[in-house]
Length: 359
Image (cartoon, rainbow, N blue to C red; front, side):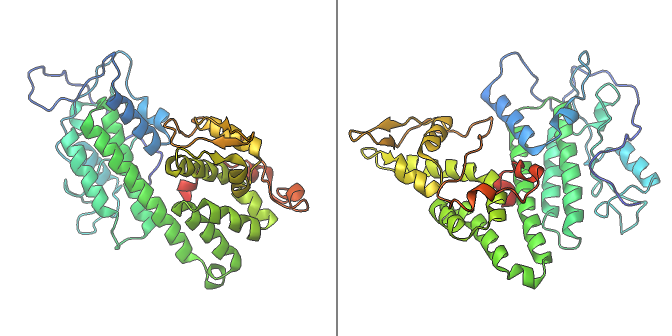
């Protein structure tokens, strides 16, 4: 039976909960307390970034039930291993000698299951932090596997790291070790998405890869990754078609904010940067550029000649949490601007992805 990842099915593990033994020598995670320290907040931030379905995954504990302390010594609980062997529900990475009905504690990794809760599960079904750390290292080593297609590796690692986050959540673990694991999982998914883009490129036909439009698209991605905002906007103005301008529009404010940060941190403090010059480079109106600076936490000023400038070396730069509002492209000829988005469906024009997802 082929394994299915994503929305998990209940595993039927519903034995009565054992009472916690106060004298147990099992490693006990840090418990929540009224005072929220920065590390705890940082852990939550990593969890949000690494798990788009956090609200669904994290709502596992009954309000009146205590947090669990995991005692499972293996990457997958024995009960789950036995049940998945009976159901032949084993990934290709978990099969002992290729047998879809046999596995071992060294191969099986606990699956993500949306329907479980702390009311229905025992401590022996939850892995302790040292075991979770060992499981994560095992999964990271699988990322570079060349024996199986990329999609198979990605689906397996995505599901099993999601299960790791679930075990951490059910135990309310928010310490330094948990933060380190969240960081590693974010890095793994970030790298795998980059590999996914490379894989997509390799699947394209040679005529498409050698086309002028593909060269232009890849050049824009490269300029954004390198932080070469001037080359990015110059190429955009000189080469982009109406459709390409519309497709790239959702990403422009992120590139502009990146450029503002470079100017702010690298400029000479005694020489504020004139907004008129910067607005021409970034293809945005001067008044809208000033607003964008304010949205990013920077102040602007007026020099003796009455010109608006950006004082540099400011320390309060930050990207707005609520995102950017839409700004019009300037420096585009009058014929091109009015029809820039006419040939593109409205849902596509409203798409607001981050450029980091293309890297």
